[in-house]
Amino acid sequence: MSFVGTVTSLEDHRRTRSRRVVGVRQLLPQPTLFFDLRSPYTYLVAERADRLFEGLEWRPASADVLPGGEPDADGPGAADARARLLGLPLVWPEDRPYRVPGAMRVASLAAERGCGAAFVLAASRLAFCGGFDLDDPEILAEAAAAAGIAVDDALHAAGDVVRDGPIEAAAGMLLAAGAQRLPLLQVGRTRFCGEDRLMEAAAAARAVG
Image 1: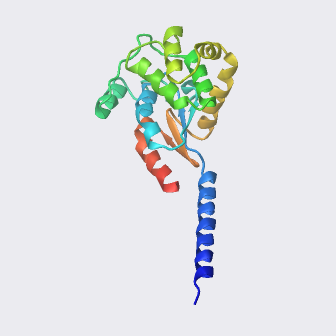
Image 2: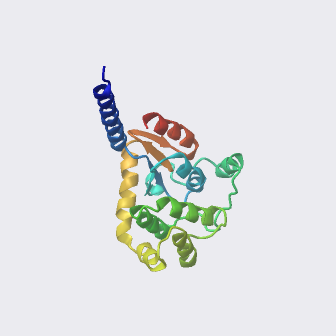
Image 3: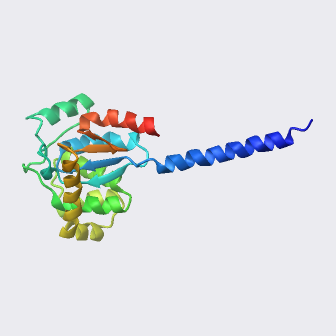
């Protein structure tokens, strides 16, 4: 008795099944991290998020649009306490309330180029480990260089107010969906609001992946 035909059939079945699995994975929604660089919680998320999610999309959004948009909305010292719990240093920039529209515009450029993770990590470390003002051109250039963005491109993006529209629109979309604050992780149709829900979002991403 010959089993050649049977073996071939099984091998074809495995290849077909493999293609179907790959196709399903490609259809799965890409996890997205909405962030504002003015928030220390973005720094606390950035230190861990890229290791937890495969193919994470980084998307800047304006925290000012959301009810809990202020960096210390959880109360004085809340971010500092959270950083200590995570074993991370936290140094606030001198100027508060802290807003960095130029850096957010460069973040949108970084996201477009696929280097959002590198830029956000570098920028948030400079802001909340070093206490530097991200809208200082020299500091902004340093963060951009860490993400492989040319200084001229970064400075041009920093002054491009047209980029503000999509950043505000992203926050408006989240507000309409009931979001209260940033950072926010979206996995499929589920939104995980706040840095403290990072691990919950990562578990959800593994479940659908």
